[in-house]
Structure formats: structure tokens, C-alpha cells
Amino acid sequence: MMERLQRRLGYHFSDTALLLRALTHRSAGPDHNERLEFLGDAILGCETADWLFRHVASGDEGQLSRMRAHLVKRETLAEVARELQLGDILRLGPGELRSGGQNRDSILADAVEAIIAAVYLDGGMEAARALVRRLLGKRLEEAHATLQQKDPKTRLQELLQARRLPLPRYEVERIEGDQHAQEFTVSCRVDSLGIATEGKGRSRRKAEQQAAEAFLTVIENE
Image (cartoon, rainbow, N blue to C red; front, top):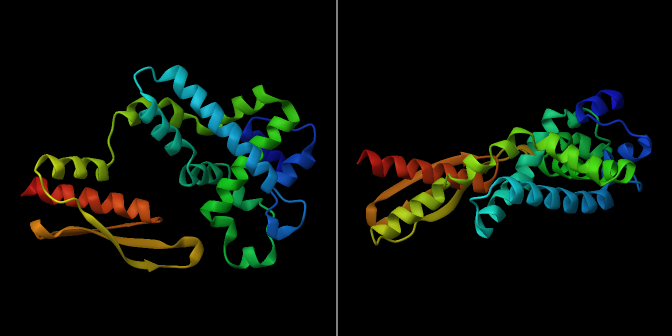
């Protein structure tokens, strides 16, 4: 499994103990990956910022910051981890295994950051930078197109402000499912319009965006 993971990463370790540590959650023992997470987070942020600076010439500081935040956020890194099938190889303690820790976004994202740091320590900065570019892949290539798009919450806020209407209120209506696979239901409402919509997602933020998208659809249909 370690060999298959290295093939997926496109990098083979001279010191495989570094990779093993990167895959070890603190619940599994004292030689865990938290310090590697700290280092990997910094490397990931730096390389992503460098790529955006060099390739997205039209972005200002605020836009580039938002794009970087999107690329390095927990949900994005968890997607990368699932593409690498990290859940099958993570070293977790019995409690985390029973609670489904191998599927939890936070644990998967932390492991990706730890692996980036492990590659840096094993092969140097260029190896780590190349790994970041491979892991983010098309997400980096699509950065410019994504940058031009405003998310539903922003579009809804700008629309309401243009009409001199109150801003929407977002409230969590329900949280369902196990802790490692929760689903949030969030409402979006503007009382003066008599409109309320709902959205669902694996995080509160995603649910809010879906609720805002539904709200925009209602306004457009009316």
C-alpha cells in the first residue's frame, strides 16, 4: 500500500519512515504527524500563492487571497486525499477507527499537509513544490476561471444591496448524521420579501451557499 501511494504521489521516498509518520494520526501513538502538518501547511500556502501570482495576472490581492483560501481549505485537501485513497492507509487509533476517522475531512486534509512536509524533508523544496502542483492539478489550472466567478452568497448580497433591501439571514435548521459525516441544513431568508429557502451540505458554509443559490433562483423566477 505504501508503494502504491508513492506511485500515486509521483514521488518515492529515500526515508519511508517520514511517509509513515505523515500517515500517523495522534490517536495512533506519539510519533504522529502534527508537526509535519504545521510545516506542510506553510509549504502548501507558499507554493499556491507563488503559482497564483505568476499565472493569474488579472487578480488583485483580495482576489488572489480568496483563491488561495479556496485551494488550500479543508474540503479541497480532503478531496485530494480521497483521490489518493489515503483513508485506506492512514494509521489511526482504535477510537478513531470506530468513529470513522478515516473518512473525516479534517484528518484527511491534515494527512495531505503532512505528506507535503515529508516530501520536503526527504527531497527538498523543489520536490515539495512539484508535489503540490501535481496534487492540486486541474484545480490550479482552473484558478483563473474560478476567480472570475462570484459565489452565490456574494451574488445574493450584491443583488439585495442594489435593490436597497435588507441582507439575508442564515440559520442552521438541522444537523444530521454521524459526527464524521454530518449534513447541515441551513435556511436563507429575507423577511421583507417573504422568501425563505434551504440548502444542504457537508459543512455549514456549503449549506449556506446552496440556500443562497436557491434564493437567487426564486428571485429570478419571480
